[in-house]
Length: 114
Length: 110
Image 1: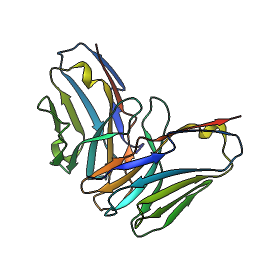
Image 2 (image 1 turned 45 degrees about the vertical axis):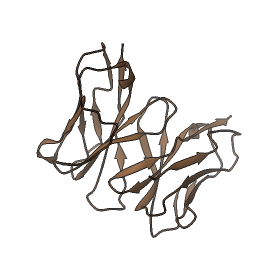
Image 3 (image 1 turned 30 degrees about the vertical axis):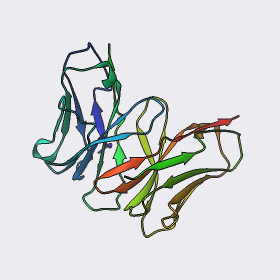
C-alpha cells in the first residue's frame, strides 16, 4: 500500500460544470476526511466519514457539494455547478478508527474553475 | 471553536542553523497534535504526531513538544538544510476533525 491516492491530480473546468474527485485511503483506515485549501491558507475541514457513514459536515459544504463513501472504501467528492470560488486544492486524509492516531494525506486534487 | 495560530508566518535562515517553529491553540481538549510539511503545490507529509498524554516526540533532526495546558507546541529543526525549505503546518485533532494553522514558510539558504 502506497498511501492515500487522489485522482485526478489536476482538473480545469468551466464555470457551471460538475466535477468529481476520487480518494482511495490506506486500506485498513476507517476514518476518511476531505479538506479544502486555498493559496496561503491552512486546510479547512469539509467532511468526515467513519466507514461508510458521513458523520460530520462543515458549513463550508454547501448544497452544491456532496461526498460519498460506498462500502467504506474509496470516497468521491462531487461539486455541482462549479463557481470560480471553488478553485482550490482538495485534500483527502485517512486514519485508523482509534483516536490519537496519525492522519495521512494524499497529494490533493488542484481544481481550477475558469 | 478551536483556533490554531502559527508564528512566524515566514522564516529565512542560513544553512546549518537550528530553528524553532511555534504553534498555539485555544482549546486544550485535544486528542493529539500533528506536524506536517507541505511542498509547493503538493499534499501534506506527516512529520511527527504527539498524542495528548505525551510531551514530546523526536524523529531524526526534528523534535516536537506539546504543552496542552498552555496550548502550545514547538517544532525544533536542528542543523537546517536547503531541503528543509517548505511550509510547515501544525494541526490539532478535536471532535471529528483536524484544525490547522496557516503554516510557517521556511527557506533555508545554502
